[in-house]
Image (cartoon, rainbow, N blue to C red; front, side, top):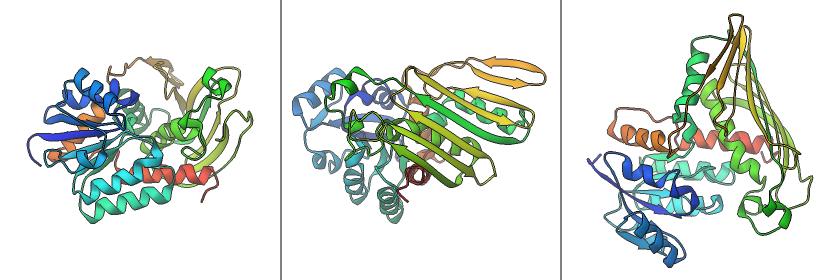
Length: 324
């Protein structure tokens, strides 16, 4: 790989303001040279605020610019497949925001397009690169809770003002995100569980729209089993009276508990007592994930979040939702 890789972003919306965009500029060997948004004025505004030399309202112009080596697709998921295939055909490196695509079939098609051309493909499941979750992985590998028996995740949220107003929100539009916030949020946790405990060999679930506030599903219950034999279950409800986000990994000699989205301490309980670990996330939460992309491209690290791993997560999601 060339020493400096020049990136362009398709869809410079909220996720790129703090979570990801600045990290591309901070990473040694990466340069952010172009952004695209359908509204040219907003693309220009973003480029000027972040000191990026080029901006477009046409994705093809960015993708086919010979000075752009790699493309980060940060649009809503229903357009990921469309843009990803164009990036592959242009012969460029690609990073796609999660979820990789609205369904497993499109994920496989994206992976095939990049594998056919031997091009690197990453998907922004950045929790695999965060120190707090790699601490959980270390504790599991050190056998601190003995043999792992099962994992359970409860994620509940109250309906937001936007949900109750019924104003349009692509995250709850069944045409874009059939399972609503489950698609957007549960994918993070399920992907992380595969990273921590190995791939999942079977999954199933039940889902419904309890509140009827929007077209997407708002309540999901699922169960799965990892190839290792570890059992898993989860409950996701976006119409509850309180917010809760808690994962428990139970072993033969103890348990580890933590939150996926809240920066709460990791808790380890064993016969020796209770230990808490406070590990803060970086300001730009995708920083380590993006730095690891450069190391992968340099050949010094195998990145933990690729098209292949993200497609597996999409398969698990579709199984829980009864789409496969």
